[in-house]
Length: 471
Image (cartoon, rainbow, N blue to C red; front, side, top):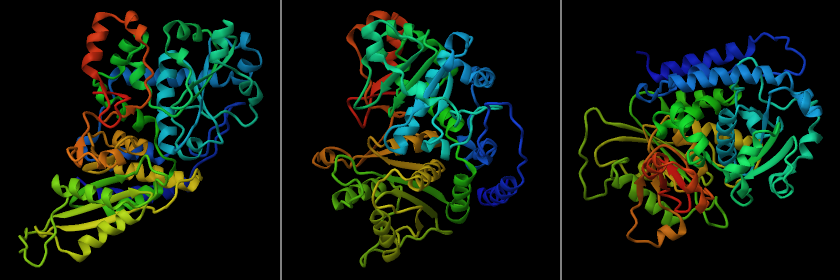
C-alpha cells in the first residue's frame, strides 16, 4: 500500500490538475454553484487518514443524505417564489444559518443547524458573505447551499423573533431563532413551540453552539437520530467529514504541509493549545506550559530529555515522533522545539516539532480562518490528539480525527487545583454542548425508554460542567 507521503504528493499534483481543468457548466436560473462545488477533499480526505480511521457511513444515514440532496436540489429552484409568495411555495421549507463568533463556534453551529434541517426536511442555506461559504466545499450534489446574491434578503432581515411569535401566537411564514451562548430563545426547547415551527416556511437560525446532544433529548428526534447514527459517539465525526470539507485553496495548503512535514514513518502527535478565561487568549503562560509538559511526558506521548547525569538508552532504529502544534501563541511551539533541539531524548527518539501559523492575536479575518481550518484538519490526521478544555477549535479537530482526545487542564481555575491531573481522556469524540438549556418539565414528555437511554448516553461534559455531551 502506498505511503501517506506518496499519496500526499499524488493528491497535490491532482489538485493543480483539477483546479485548472474545470469545465464551466450552465446552470438553471437561480441555481448558482460556487467555484468550489467540485472539491478534491471530498474524494481524497479518506486517503489522508489512517486506514483504521476511515468510517463506513451507516446505511440509514447514507439513504437520508441522498434523499435530502434530492429535496435540496428540487427546492433550491423555488427559492425566490417561496419567499416573495410563501403560499405558492409548495411543500418546500427552508432554514438559513447565520454564523457567530470564532470559526470553531461557527462550524459547530453549522453542523447542528444541518442536523436540525435534516430532521425537519428543510433546505439548509448559508450566507455567501460568511466564512463557511469561503472555506467549505458545496456539500450537496447538483445544487448549492448559498443564498443567491440577487435573493431578496430584506425579507429574511424582517423575520420576527421566535420570542415575539410565541407572545403574539402568530408565527407567520418567517421566524428567526437564536440558539447561542449569550442569546437564546428558550421557547425553542419546548415541544409545543417546535410543533408550531413545522408550519413556518422560512426559519433563520443564529448559533455558536453544538446543540446536537439536545436534539437527542427531543422526543420527536430521538429515534430518527438513533437510526441515522447507530454509534452515537461517532455522529459528529460522520457530520464533519460530510459537511466540513475544505475548498481546494485550503486543501492544497493542508496537503502540501502534510506531505512536507508530517507524513511518512513515525508517530504523529497533535497538540492544540488555547488559554480560556484570560484577557489575552494569545498570551504565553509558563504554568500552563509546565502542565502541558507534565501531560505530554507523563503520558509517554513525548520522551524524557537527558541531562548531564543521564545516559541515552538508544533504540535501533530510533523512533520518529512528529509533533504538530496549533496555538495562537507561537511561543509554546518555540519553547517545545528548543527543548528537543537543546537536549537529546532519553530513549534516542527523534522528535520534530512543527507549526502551521503563529497569529499572536485572534481576529475575524478570512486569512486567519483559512489557517484555522487547515490546522483543524492537520490535527485530525494525528495518531494521538491533545486539546485544550472547552475549546471549540479542538472539538472540530477531534471530530475530524474520530478519536477520544486527551484534554489539557490549563484554565486558571484548573492550575490552582493541585489534585487535578495535567490532562485526562475524553469519553467520546463528540463535542460538548456548552449551554444545553434544560427545562424541568421536559422529562414529562419523554418515554421511560428514552429516559433510560439518556441516563447512559447523555453525560455532563468533562471540560464544562454546565454542558452535556454524547458518550
